Image (tube, rainbow, N blue to C red; front, top):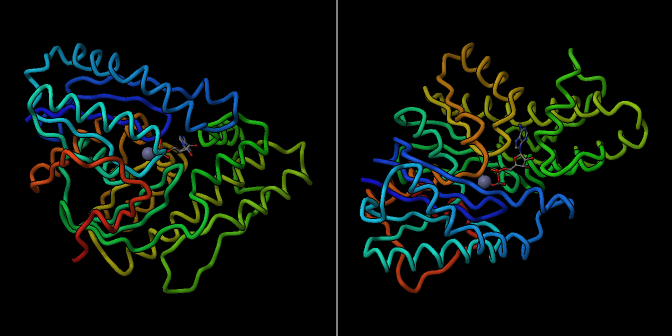
Length: 336
Ligand code: KG4
Ligand code: ZN
């Protein structure tokens, strides 16, 4: 089954065709990030307008790259939420209209669920697993027992990890998105961090995250040591990586699965990848991290998630629109 995936929840307009949830046939993506940099972050109205201009050519180019025509597509999957409302509206409305014209089903996909399915493009998924999703807007740790069954174990109580990196980068005068810029700057610094930054302790039984204290401490650090930008960047990256790994390891003690999946933009970070892979090797657990291009927002993951959602009997009704906010636990049927 060939599914056309469409992603427009933030600043990337993306389309991809994936066969049977696993094989990528063709993809195209256009980002408004360079335009957004002028404003130091994503401006919702700018994002929506750019999606409206880009969505049709991006879909046409994805089909061309896959050497396919409209009649070769069996269903459309689109990010239904959460995300920027105006941006989602463009993708959802376009997908519904296209599905009507092509007389095929349309499936609405949860953006975080879609991030997890980037792993299905790498290898056949194995359950049960622990799933760590770390993006610009979310930080979520879950127990994933099978398609359609996911139990959220912990989430951020304030800022997301990506948000902490983006804000930290801004304090260092680096452009948006800040995560990759922090990683680049930190690469020149070896050894343990020069400035140990606080990692939130939320009680021994909690698997939640908190990054607001780290953000405040980092602000103070940049004020005190304006000449130590690379060392500060490395200290921030280490603190974020440590906070993520600590909870993952703690979750593993309680749920000793044999598979861990990472997903979301921040998991493109090579320091995080190294740390989780090394831990996985010592703990005897398989770790899967999508290649960086599938960690950040893309449409192949949406098409893959749409395939598995379709297998579960999901489709989007004619009266449905974008859903935001939309909690991950409301999508998945909890239970182990
Ligand atoms: O998943 P994503 O592309 O979009 C959302 O759903 O939010 O994640 C974007 C986030 C941004 O905060 C960005 O700074 C971060 O992912 N990011 C990274 C890296 N690449 C992207 N953070 C750390 N290291 C990276 N290499
Ligand atoms: Zn995302």
